[in-house]
Image (cartoon, rainbow, N blue to C red; front, side, top):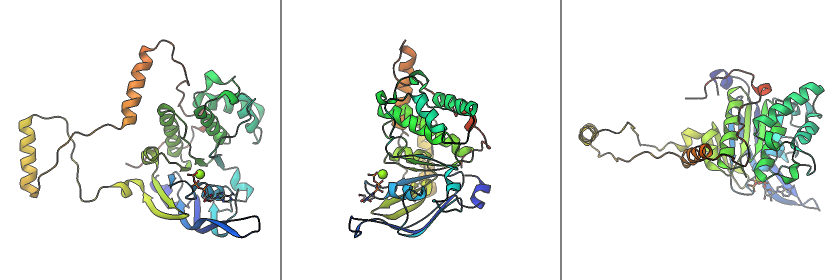
Length: 317
Ligand SMILES: Nc1ncnc2c1ncn2[C@@H]1O[C@H](COP(=O)(O)OP(=O)(O)OP(=O)(O)O)[C@@H](O)[C@H]1O
Ligand SMILES: [Mg+2]
């Protein structure tokens, strides 16, 4: 998020949002949301976390105007989610990607591209670029019914990006993807946010959320129990870490003694570890170099040129 972004108006505002599902006789059955307050700022990646049934997908459906709140307010770009003007600025990846089994990836994307006000050449260009971006160029002529779950997710993401949305709402975008696919999707989400797009995503994959979300909300039983900047929420209080390259034993003894003299406490010493994701991706990368004819999805991962607009500023340090 940039300085200027934080002073502009929020993209999403939810205030005291309640949603109660009623049964067939219109008796209250499930209180899925019980007074949710949150704001999402432009250019931010905002994560919704919570156990199964916490209300994440319900909140997402309210943002999209697919459900109406029982009470409370919700605004997207300062408009009601039911206003069609907000819809053309939003891209949505549902929890389950439902695809027409007998269409190919290209036919699927071309079908959805027709829903937008684009001429045939622009449609074809966007579909080509998105197929390349999600790494399905090799499989584009296969019918999507044959696709693995992760390949289906990639198509779903491409579909959500066809209209070059300002706000992307992604319900579990990385579920079902292999680690390299997850890394790619995370990189794409970050690249979009750096170019000013706003992203709201839900996920159970905490490592992914920690990796890319600027702020998070943790829901439980329809209420927000934690909300804030990811880094602030996770910072270990009253601890300081100093990291430096390997030094001789003697130098280490001197450093430790100096810290102990200055602070009166004995520091803990250990070696930092790399995240398993980095290690795994390194192993796969070297395996790919030794494998002559690798199978599976191609790498993809470069942002589609039509999405590559807006300032590419550094994320928060
Ligand atoms: N259409 C519906 N009718 C009745 N109850 C519903 C409906 N949709 C959701 N619920 C209920 O609302 C609560 C919240 O569901 P929701 O799908 O929002 O959870 P979630 O956080 O997305 O869970 P998950 O992690 O499993 O996707 C659950 O108790 C669920 O059973
Ligand atoms: Mg859900």
